[in-house]
Image 1 (cartoon, rainbow, N blue to C red):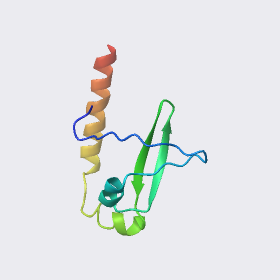
Image 2 (cartoon, one colour):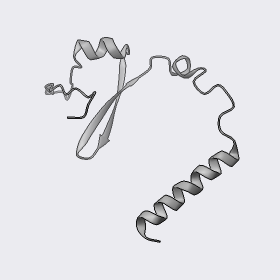
Image 3 (cartoon, rainbow, N blue to C red):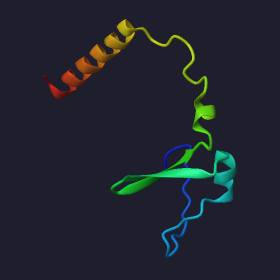
Length: 86
């Protein structure tokens, strides 16, 4: 099991519904979730009730310059190329 990840087994009703345990609902503090289908498994993620409020100010500030972004992409390209033997 991955550190920091808890597993909980829940039943699926005949209508295809599941109930999230109260501990998880309280910790997430949301009323909606999204289920992401990844073929062999599904991921349940919290969806903020008010996404605008939840993300307001999260990306404040100048952020990286275009030169820094290009350098990071070049480094990633070089790393990928050396990993594949190109």
